[in-house]
Length: 249
Ligand SMILES: NC(=O)c1ccc[n+]([C@@H]2O[C@H](COP(=O)([O-])OP(=O)(O)OC[C@H]3O[C@@H](n4cnc5c(N)ncnc54)[C@H](O)[C@@H]3O)[C@@H](O)[C@H]2O)c1
Image 1 (cartoon, rainbow, N blue to C red):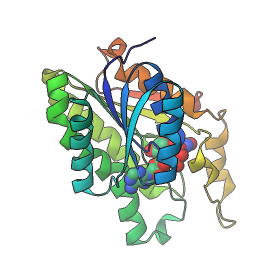
Image 2 (cartoon, rainbow, N blue to C red):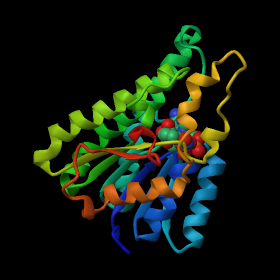
Image 3 (tube, helix red, strand yellow):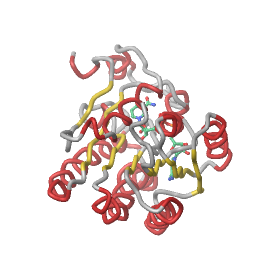
């Protein structure tokens, strides 16, 4: 399949996990990738893998919490390839901890990466996407839909991202710009490996989220590729759950 021949895709979180898998998947279908992340070495590794598989990828170290850097990233993607067809907001952070102990700094940090970043990037990308009749795919989480203990900031950020998706989908539908969100369940990435359950947490509150089988980042990349492709031309404002049935039960 070459659903993305000559399509330009800006991917955030491109150094790791789902972002890296998305770069590989979309490039294998012909996309020209502009990948951003904080992790220079991870970006270089992703670009190397894309190029050695015959794909095209440019990278830049950019922080999605900075509105200026979001604007720059969009401008650079357009300058590099001439247009922009897809924005994939994949970068994210997760912090586990008792809600009453979350500091102002931690709260602001999680909201800045998971919610403000996708908003700043979307704002910056909209003019180019109106021109290309392109689309945005936001990676939210099942924890943007259902509550998860010890994750107040994360749940709030992902719930906010889902509403951001719906609001912008309604607003730009007439201009033929589609905006969708994916809600992954547990997925085998650095983020999941790094979650720190401390001993004073009640495992019974966490356990139900571990009932469904863990997915791979490639499973999410497939969903991103579908939503970003013309095959999904009727899909707009959708909250696409990829969780092995977790939310169904
Ligand atoms: N892994 C899971 O179980 C799971 C489940 C549901 C949703 N998600 C979501 O999927 C997305 C991808 O996560 P992943 O599992 O691939 O994690 P990951 O940690 O492997 O990758 C996240 C990437 O985001 C980058 N990043 C973080 N802060 C950034 C910033 N300020 N600017 C630019 N880049 C930044 C990191 O450097 C990293 O490369 C996230 O939005 C996450 O919340 C993950």
